[in-house]
Length: 149
Image 1 (cartoon, rainbow, N blue to C red):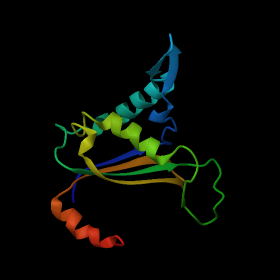
Image 2: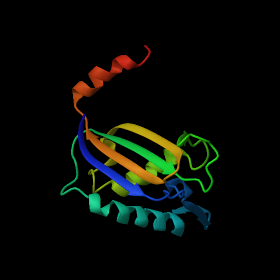
Image 3: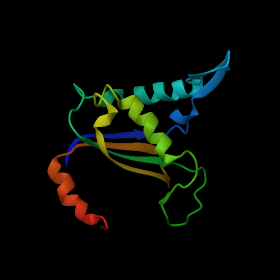
């Protein structure tokens, strides 16, 4: 894999996810809409990512590696700087919103994301770590041996 972009954003990530879109019924028809807090979270993330924008969107198969780091007001794990976060927001919902924001800027279409490596953790310092890699066919062939058959 070839590293194309490394991004570090400080501060607690938003806990608002793309799954929080709204639905209202008008004349018996369900209408989906984006809630204002979701629009605001996506705008803020877009502004945070702007300094890292590539000259043109990356092409081909990509790997997106992301770590959402959420800080705690009081750290209860003595001597432990990081632990996995197993509470809301859901990891799959976080990545959907991030991919939506990055599509069109970092890659043309999110169908190019062939591999995802995602984590959410408690950490003393909140933030978002993002890496984008170019995938080659050999990457799959070399790594498939790591799975049980």
